[in-house]
Length: 311
Picture 1: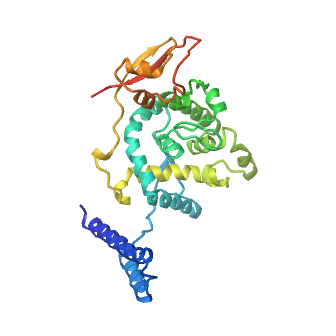
Picture 2: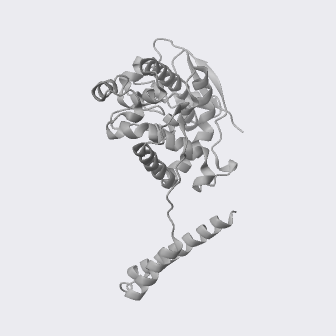
Picture 3: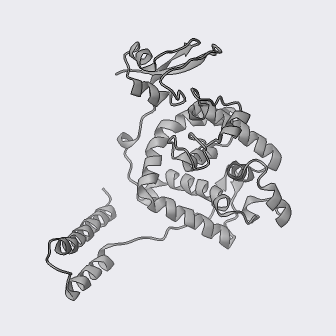
């Protein structure tokens, strides 16, 4: 381990120990800490605890498009997102671990569609590679609302919701981004439109007479959006610079599975899973797009269902 990290780790242990002493005194009826104890505690913090400001990159790009780092507000916006994502340790560390599982799935689909690799970080900031549901009802890794998902050919109904199908949702995201890029001629604007809606930025572009994302004053969420992607890209690609220590063994491995094509009704998914020697839970983890415990499939569509490989 790096000597500086040993000192930092030791300092944090010492700080925690000091805090515990004060808390112990408070909760065991020993009374409030004395002025001398408070002064010692404050001195301990000042000597041992460090929170660093982060150096900004002098050059950085998004999807091959240069970011104008000479502009003060651009630097400050990126600085904000770097600080948030660096010091939100648990979330960023989990993103790194999950990326090892899901980037190998997402990257080939982006490449096959001519979408810059940087857009895999869009999925990171949208969902942290979890099947979250937003207050607006956006779902899955790529956070499609129902109407947009259907517009881009995802099947969404009571039994099947392909917003949770990683490969199909990634393809739908690629189709969206290609359409947005053809509209704006900029990948940064395509990303902004992913947040605002495909026509969302146009009104502001006309009002402000600017075409570049970096020159537009947008609502807070969209104004931060591409900077969040940039920050996560920069941190995840330079983890050691920001104090993240992740061993290969800590990363989440891609799922191993075989696929079974089904074009009939499945009355009971638990029984279906049992035929392959796996549990209902294991089946659902690999196929979260199956939203019920059955699949009626009245139209006799063909579905590819992943079956986990047992070690």
